[in-house]
Length: 101
Image (cartoon, rainbow, N blue to C red; front, side, top):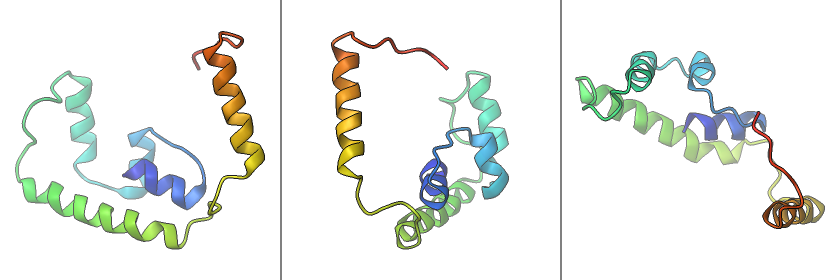
């Protein structure tokens, strides 16, 4: 949800929750990220669960309202769609090598 909100607000994809949380200020997110880093992400969420439910409701409402004020265009330009399609075809045919960043 934080990535989607950031994208709709800025037009940029940001998947780093630490970065996103500087704006969201979810007090529990650092603790949850620490659980994930320690390999304990499958454990039940720390109590009280209502804290997470309330944050989820708030983020969902913000995400549902965000398209009304987004800077993103309503549609992807045809040239961009063709360029992405051509790139995908070239990658699948092995004409391009993907590199990790």
